[in-house]
Length: 135
Image (cartoon, rainbow, N blue to C red):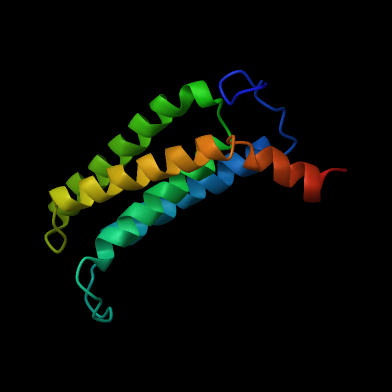
């Protein structure tokens, strides 16, 4: 049986595009995280924590399709540091704050993304390329 850990990393035809999409996600999240909140609609309590968790789960899933499973721990730590940097930058804006609860929501989202990536073998990029983008 081939496990996630033993599978070779696929040669993706569009690896640069997948990476560019991931970095576009990171930049978009950073910009949105540093924007003022004035003018936004009222949201239910703790909905921003759910958004944090979902955002970081998506980031973990996205990049898990581009790295070997043995690098998931490093990916997790990199994205966690990214979340901490965002929180620190928010504290410098004067109109956003740094919250421990946001960091915890980011962490939970990353763990959820890691579990889903492992359960799905982390080969979603390869599967999409083979199904829809193969020449």
